[in-house]
Image 1: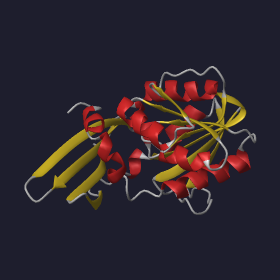
Image 2: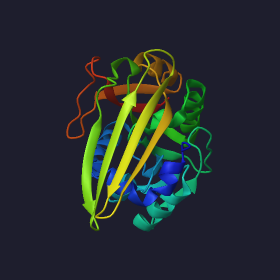
Image 3: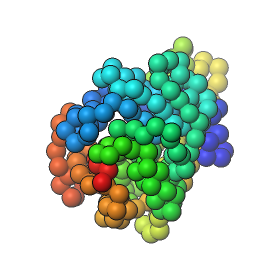
Length: 247
C-alpha cells in the first residue's frame, strides 16, 4: 500500500486504532503551555488533525479551532465530530493562511510525516509565517538516536462483534535522515480475519538537529513527554514535547 492508502481505506477505524491515546490529557497539556508561554490569543490550528479529537477538547477551552490534514476521509469525520471548527485539505509542509493563528499544534509525532529534513524545514517556515507575533507552536517528537527497533505498541478493541488488534513501532537503520513507522491492523470476526500492514517513511533526526532547525524562527522550550505535568526535558529521554514561541 502507498503512504495514504491504509489511512484512506480504514479511516473509519482510525479512532479505534488510537483508542488507547488520552487525547484530553494531551490537549490539556498543550493548553497549559499556551497559557504560560503564548500571547493570550484563541485562534488555533491543528496540523495533521486526523479525525479531530484534539480539536474537540481544545474547542472546549474556547479556542477558535481549525484543522489541516492531507486525507479527506479523515477531515470528513473531523467535521462530523467538530461541526463548529473549520477544516482544510492540505500539506503541512506547504500551507499558507489568510489570517494568522495564535496557537498551532501537531500531535502524535506527526511532525515526522514531513518525510525529510528539507520538507521539515519548509513545514517550520510555514508554521512561523502562519503565527501571530508571540504565537506558539507545540508538537512532540522522537530522537532517532534513542529508537529501539525491538519495541512496539499494541492494543485490542472489540467493536460490533469484531476484535481489532493494532500495532505500531518505529524502525531506524542507525544512519541517515529516514525512519519508518510500521503499522498493522487485524480485524477478526467469527468467519474471517483480515490483516492490513503499512510502512510510512518519516523524517529522522536527533533533538540537537531539530533545535538547530527551529532556532532561527522560535524561542524553544523542551519538556519531558508527560501530559499530566510540565517538566523540563532531562536531555536524556528520546521523546519530548517542543514548545516554540515565534520570535
